[in-house]
Amino acid sequence: MARGKVQLKRIENPVHRQVTFCKRRAGLLKKAKELSVLCDAEIGLLIFSAHGKLYELATKGTMQGLVERYMNSTGGTQADHANVNEQKVLESKEEINMLKHEIEFLQKGLRYMPGGGIRTMTLDELHMLERHLEIWIYQIRSAKMDIMSQEIELLKNKEGILKAANNYLHEQIGEQYGTSNFGPVITNPYPLTIYSEIYQY
Image (tube, rainbow, N blue to C red; front, side):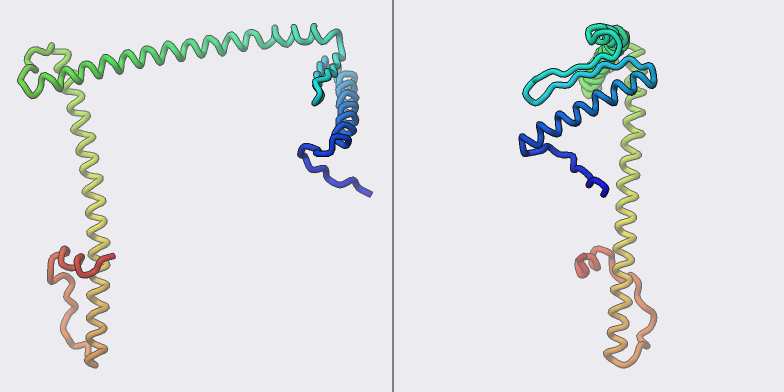
């Protein structure tokens, strides 16, 4: 008979939990030894029980030797991470300084522009201010075009709704009076604002 699948969660019964710990610990240590023998691997295993008791296994040499070897092998990686972090900090500081300089320049330009003090700015500052103004104009025009496109789309939707309402009313009048000979359907006899007040959606 096949053993049922064990649900992986904390065992609440302390007796069952201790028995399971002992069995699984012995199985884990056995598998580590087998892996070391079969694959000629150097394995170090540390286990702390719930009560703080230490169980360890070093298949070759001592645990201290394995820990020192581990520290030596990861020491270079940690140093690389430290160098990368230091480089990122330096880049962040440079970017912050550049942004501070740009903010000060823009504030200076804004102070000078209304009062005509722009003539006291240097040629380089004027070129930089001109580039910023061109960028701002482009961004403003893009935002304006987006808003206009949205409003045009909204008006098209309103127009479609009003046309559908107009056709529906025309059909209702035709059915009520038994004839549909009322001439062509009026698509837009009044401005959109009048229709939008009548048909809110």
